[in-house]
Image (cartoon, rainbow, N blue to C red; front, side, top):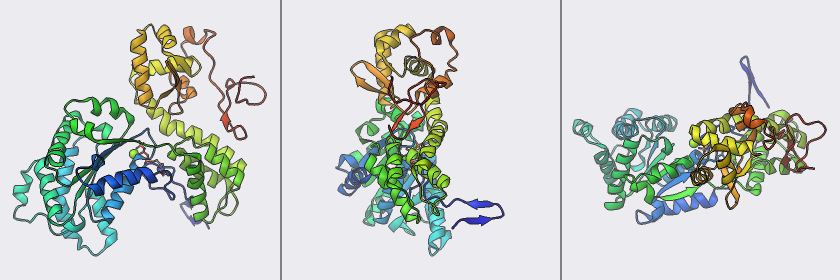
Length: 431
Ligand SMILES: Nc1ncnc2c1ncn2[C@@H]1O[C@H](COP(=O)(O)OP(=O)(O)OP(=O)(O)O)[C@@H](O)[C@H]1O
Ligand SMILES: [Mg+2]
């Protein structure tokens, strides 16, 4: 079953513990995709015609964006697929529109694999416009056109051919402010004012709520429909594990399946990491994936999550926010704004507002009024690690507990709450 070469053995895992990769089983996204899809087919009058997906790292934004792009392209839409992770977004949009004609011409259109590669490299799928936009004569004129003219030109061409254009922008939180304002302005003009068939789908981290959405010069983005990426339910996760395993001729015991699904904690990325590790540890597909393989996988997945999600998410925070998160962590992972204010000597209201913002960003939740608790985005032990837990003046105070063990306990479906170096067995509840 395994594919061996002199270089090594290729992985035969049906899971995708990576970012931006469409999984074997896309689960828990039916209603989101249906909402966005209905918005697109309803046209510019529908608020969902211009939408933004928001969620923490690994919540499946890029995958959802890709799925919508594929569905739109299959329906004959012209799809312009962009990424705002690096500066120069507007220039890249203009360039891909200008390059599209030349790239398709050079292609000869017969080889669909080459076509796909070219489409990816220029970020545009022309659909019905192949061979119909731009001529060599007007190339020079077009090179002097700005973003709005380029987009209008493309949208008009699509309209004349009974099609529409979908512009997608991933990593929207990374957009340069000046570029964001210009894009907002141009899209507002084309889509909202002129009601031309240019749909927009953006995706980015939750911080968008406090950056783009608060910028008064980016009204287009405020008026888009906003979708929070839904966490995967346990039932979704069961399908997300069972589908790929069975599809790759493997097997997983019922207990192992329940155990794995219970540990996903809503995160698509965590699902893929646990599935991939369990598959490899068990020696699937030759051997069944059992509970012990899943148990080990869940614990290993925690450290992968820390490196790939939690540590980058911690470094996305300002020093001041890190200080507040540190204070909550040192208070045992849950604290009132009063407690944090007392520890940090900051004004109670300032602390309350800052913690509420961190709640919007997914770092803490609010189990009760005025109470803030760390979520799994940056877990307790990662924060203690990051702040060095070295501030003895604080750490030695009896009220601040030591880092926790957090070993996963399959039967209790919970993490150990005892201190890291505890003796005896793990416990999910304090004795
Ligand atoms: N609905 C889903 N069902 C199963 N797995 C999924 C789903 N969505 C995403 N995944 C898996 O999770 C991984 C992370 O997804 P994706 O890259 O889309 O996250 P993201 O939100 O874009 O993350 P980032 O903010 O870091 O860019 C993907 O590689 C994919 O395999
Ligand atoms: Mg992404």
